Length: 118
Image 1 (cartoon, one colour):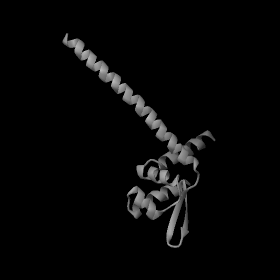
Image 2 (cartoon, helix red, strand yellow; image 1 turned 60 degrees about the horizontal axis):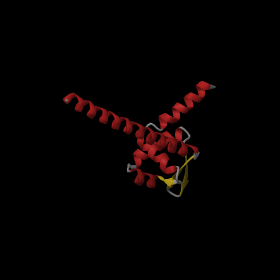
Image 3 (cartoon, helix red, strand yellow; image 1 turned 90 degrees about the vertical axis):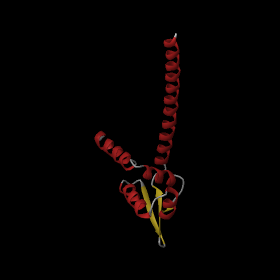
Image 4 (cartoon, one colour; image 1 turned 90 degrees about the horizontal axis):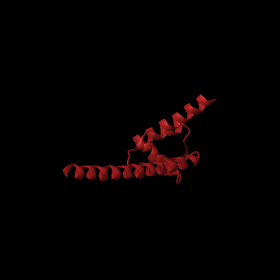
């Protein structure tokens, strides 16, 4: 069971392993969108978007429905949008840590350089 769960998680992360797919999921976490809207918002051609949407659909991350000649996509579970929001928070939390470490390193290097000159 544990191995099955890990494989499931790895599959989800693999599907999210491309910035375009992450952008699509972030947009769909806000609202349902047509393929055309997604292309416009993400800045990709329809063929490219369709490939990414197929990956997401195959991992049951998104659902689609047809209305006339348009296909609309939505996130199957809003929880995934929350996961991406947590990842954003994680990124900024660690970015702040890394920035602070660089500041300390810079101060120490400057201090060391001044002491060497004496």
